[in-house]
Image 1 (cartoon, rainbow, N blue to C red):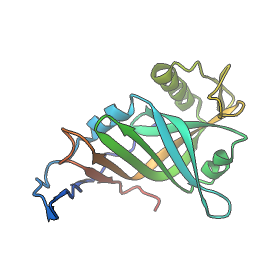
Image 2 (image 1 turned 120 degrees about the vertical axis):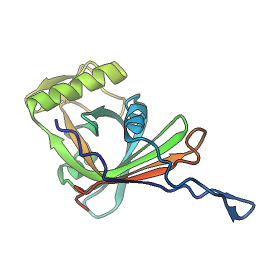
Image 3 (image 1 turned 180 degrees about the horizontal axis):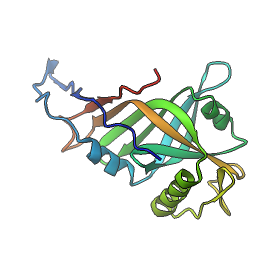
Length: 186
């Protein structure tokens, strides 16, 4: 799997108002991209939003992992979200970590290469302890999340267009950051 290019731009997007007055912010101070990836690699619940077949948003909880600098999710081949992900349309995934709310928006790409799938299974094993393995061009496991559906689980990489990290606590409150990628599909 190849890492997404480093974002060509990172901008401080903090807009803190106190007593109806915009507070001064050092606009050159942003969150480091590697710091964000470290936060995301800790796992947790992520909220995936895709567009269904009639143009409505479809949001579901998922477990995501970081593989080669990108977010990757696994979804049952029979799940409605999998159909949307196969279409490689606009996709966003959001989560909260200590001090940050994160929104990763981009497009999905199915992961089928055996070496890439091995990296995905290793990431799921180390992040969540999920005993995933590969079979053909997907993942399998003796169990899944209660709402995950049956195996096989297709892996999808979310190639970023923009990523927002909104500081909710120190040391991030004055460093809310938006990264923009030039390889964005939209």
